[in-house]
Image (cartoon, rainbow, N blue to C red):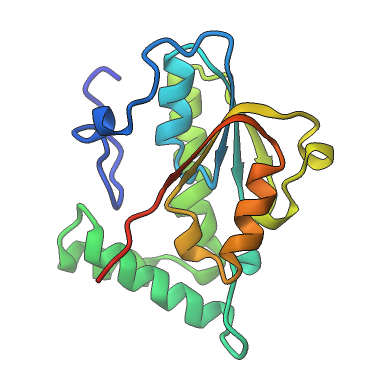
Length: 181
């Protein structure tokens, strides 16, 4: 709000209409799986929904291939961030070298979400869990809409992830996942 835009890998403001979300989501319960910095969570809330946003509890629980270390995964994430970042490459190189590995999660997921939530006076509830652990029991509820925004790309077992997300959906399950060539 007020012209403030946080830096990130993607800017969905220009493509938001293509998602065809209801303009008025009053009374809806929405689960935003893998909310990251919360763009969609805050959009759903602004439209009137009660929102729960999930995120991994730490970088250590990201899916990794056998033999891949957390450091290997972080290098992949750094390269992906550089490829899509609003920063130019010299700024990004300086940025990544300045961040201790153990603070990566805080700087790129936790702090931006918390900053935006505080700035927006948001009531979005945040739950730290793996997509594989989502169930009516762990979430304590089901949802009118479940949104997976570019989550499946980061899973080794996408069908298991979909089954978990679907288990809490009593309305629409929206999967937004670009598939590269």
